[in-house]
Image 1 (cartoon, rainbow, N blue to C red):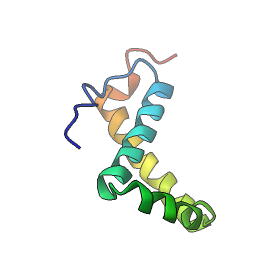
Image 2 (spheres, rainbow, N blue to C red):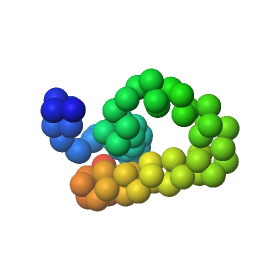
Image 3 (cartoon, rainbow, N blue to C red):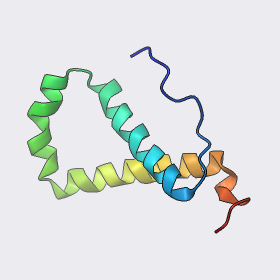
Length: 79
């Protein structure tokens, strides 16, 4: 993938930051396994795995930490 899809990690709110973390996580999977047929083949296996879902949540959480740090933990907009 050579398209520029992430011009900034700055988000207006923590919720937008969390949604960006999910997008980062999904993109990471696509970069790791670009074969969509293979991804679709494997999906039922990890979609029904508690360990797989927990691991996916962990990756999202790590990406959310990164986005939060990029946004200075939303100090200027603590609402």
